[in-house]
Length: 123
View 1 (tube, rainbow, N blue to C red):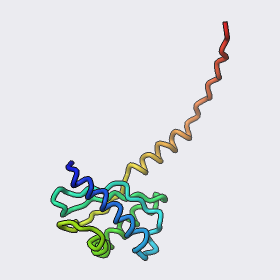
View 2 (view 1 turned 120 degrees about the vertical axis):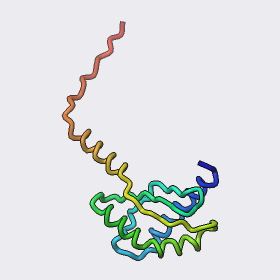
View 3 (view 1 turned 90 degrees about the vertical axis):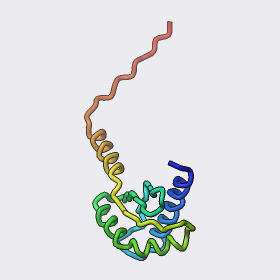
View 4 (view 1 turned 180 degrees about the vertical axis):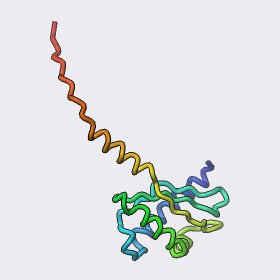
């Protein structure tokens, strides 16, 4: 990936986070929305944004609300960045967070006996 695309990904992620947290007045999108990854195509026409939410039950609803608000978000993004095109934004659920939480829950529920500490004997 080129340095130009990486810089664009970083800048778009920063701007989208600011738009969602401070400029959207939708109560369905709480302030605990995290954009985990932004990938813009090399021609800057499309952008895939992975969304994670603290409450896993709401992640689908929040993603749908963000997708429906794409027009507003694109307008605000156009004001904030200087790019050849303002990309079409596709919000998708970040499944890695849910997977990590599930693995953590499984590990927590395992009944592994604690190993007894070995006593060191000095010779």
